Length: 183
Image (tube, rainbow, N blue to C red; front, side):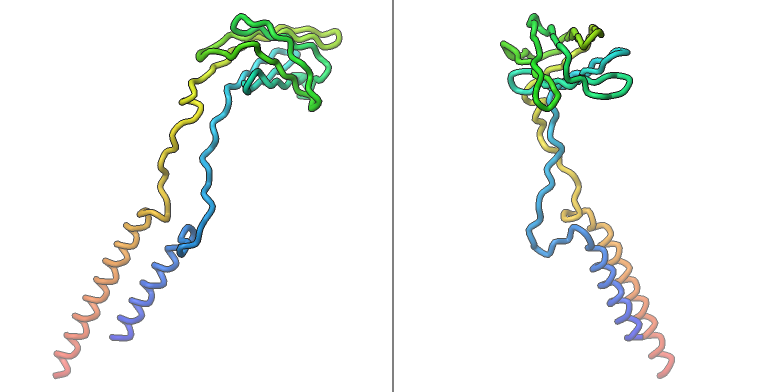
């Protein structure tokens, strides 16, 4: 019976060691995973001819213009924007994108945007909205997430301990009864 009890205790220890698994670092330093970084306000406008996607970055909008049907970048177009009372001609960048430098930053809120596109013999007028967030909305506080290194495994460990105690009591009672019958 003692061998059975020793086997149960060893099984419990192996189960606890196996459960520790991933995330159990034995005190070693692990790289922290950064939360998803917030994205800058985005602008998406499309028609049957073009798709214009923009990101508000620093002093203006970084724009990508594609042919709507083929999704091929359009790099030789004239792009002009009207937003918050500003009329801005976007300049072509070396990487095929466009940059629309703004004379003044956009205030917080939702802004209607109108884009005039001239590419070869094709012209189009696109409209959309750009929602400019407050600085706090752009950098939210990190939220706590459950971790295996925390107490997430405690209920399992307690359950295994209860099973071990029950097996020990059962084995001892069985051992006592067996000795009583021999006497």
